[in-house]
Length: 315
Image (tube, rainbow, N blue to C red; front, side, top):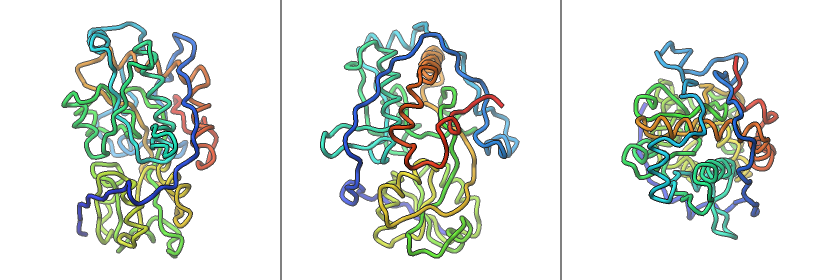
């Protein structure tokens, strides 16, 4: 199995973005309780637990509405900087009509920003490449990452995570002309694309029968390479895979999913009060119905299940 790293300019390749939509407000009752440990799929535990690794991907500090030193420092600089995606249809992408970034993760980011800062105008959204999410947090270039980021044991050594807010797994997208019906048929002996430092890339590296891995900066670059006939398939999170299939009618998802996991919000490990504050916002966001409303607005037409299937709940 060989591996190639590619830098593609995805912005020039695909302009099939959704029509404009307003961002949801951050409202919700204060003091709601965030569910504890969860399992993404009833039949499978997340990959980290299955592998026996010594970490709990659901563990995080308890929710709190108190402003500790990290939150006070952010308020003092009068801006909460949140790293987001601008290339993921329905999750975080730029509306060509308004120029604004919008999607499921963007609604959540704005809700967190408004709750923490008390003023949505004091929130700055910064586009961050998939491969540099951890680096942006560690270097202080962003305060938070809200960007379809899977919680893994390796990442827990580098950054802190909120409680999980979305169940996910890895899926494979292929051109409609491909005869592949399963993941194995789509990747064995084939050239497969994935974002650098992603769970999909980890999964492909663990599959010795994959012909060649092409690693790119952002997962949308994989869609571009498929359109150009440079790769045979793409592996990515199920929500992102569904968004690619919705964005481009010439590709489709194959049957099957691997690596059940959960997504969380990343931040510095030495800011537990910020993590606690974010966990409280997540609890309130879900309890108020805003999380479900965002799912229904952005993702429901393209996902396979009702909203609550994707909200992590205690086993």
